[in-house]
Length: 120
Image (cartoon, rainbow, N blue to C red; front, side, top):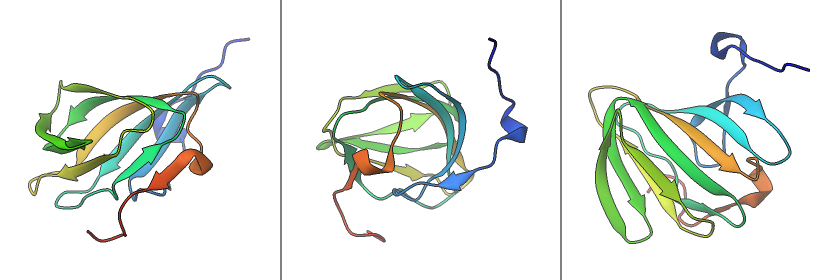
């Protein structure tokens, strides 16, 4: 059976970290989503107990914190986030930061642990 989706037909939702997500594909072992952090905003720092994530940045620019290290990110950059690693994204002021997020196993809210209060 062929399963497929179209980004424009997928309903978006807000995750625990505050980013807007469109889940494009999901199996029991992995998920793929498009995430958007609005210009000038940030996610809430968090970690996933079991999921490994890969971020591939499609548009915009900003900053990524992985554990204690921070770096600038922009379209074309890629980052691997190991399970248990705290991470946070900031979008630049000139446009939304848009990325693909692959999670294995598939994303679940109950695998997400916020590591800072909202609004920091």
